[in-house]
Length: 269
View 1 (cartoon, rainbow, N blue to C red):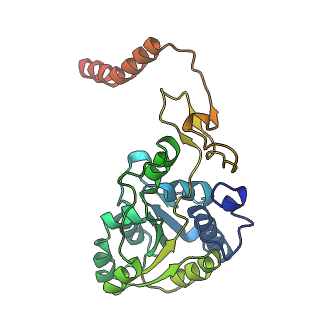
View 2: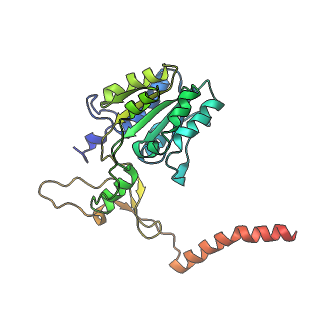
View 3: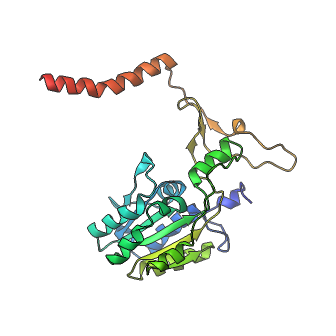
């Protein structure tokens, strides 16, 4: 049941359970480690919940083994960036981890991958939503899912149309065998992970006055006898800077003007 601790237990979650972005990221790391390929693995993420899960649950010990656009929000980044990573490091296992929304923005690069014979592995974390925005709508806007449910093609069939092999994964037990199959194929391979639709990634910053309210956990699951909690009743952490609004505004303006002042000083010198 969504909201139960057991629903997000990535260690004891049963193998027959539906996969989640967290279990997928953890299993990617475990497969790479157990195969002795961890130091030879490069992960390229797109933008969204899968990006957060990868950063939290895939343990990167090797420099430059994670390529991500960070907070820039460049959906569609992963696939073309992975092409560059594979050209730069042809001996390494390059994995694309992308959501079903972001992947569609540059899916045309499948033609480039096949044409240039680039052995990239692709993991589409498919939850049928623009997941990060959906999570905000769930918590702060009473599940008003406006423009976040999305329709996607059959990604495995799309890959096959480009001559690229692929597989569907729906249960946790299927993750490691399919990841191993992709990694050892020697050719481009796409895995369509059908994950839990309304899974969340935490912590996240709540839409509130500047940095005063944080959502540290998902909303508590209401019992059958209790009313559904509003977003105001979520668990929040408070931090206080000690600055008034005016002082904070002046500080921000000063920081914005500092580069201009430095350029002026260097120009005069």
